[in-house]
Image (cartoon, rainbow, N blue to C red; front, side, top):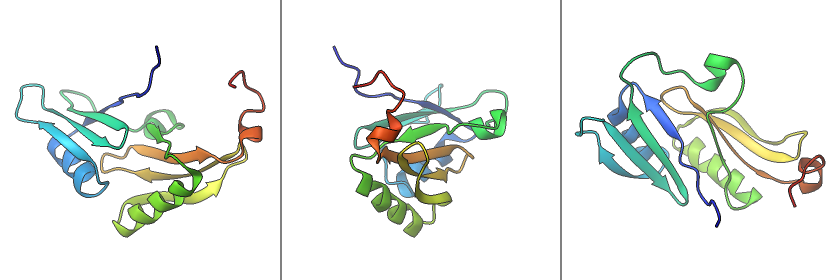
Length: 139
């Protein structure tokens, strides 16, 4: 048995607006259930699947806004070169980019974007396996 995909659940103030952003700006396909009592949608791009649900109470806040640290999701493209390709695609589409792609001290080549709900999404790939897995039980 293998676990292949994680499907995060993003809470939105207006799920229809968030769905349109993911479809029209970030290039996701979708399944729209915003007319149901639960008001949700699912967006898909390659092997990524994200469930969008409309909040019923409280304030939508990113991990960075709420806790001062951590992306709300992290996307790993299939190659290190794909990081630059996604950066260029998103820059051309006017996505809010927090930082340009860079090699981090821990060995990951990555950049970060912010969606319309303020969520921060890291996009990167391990570029230096020796550095990244220096203290690891991963083979």
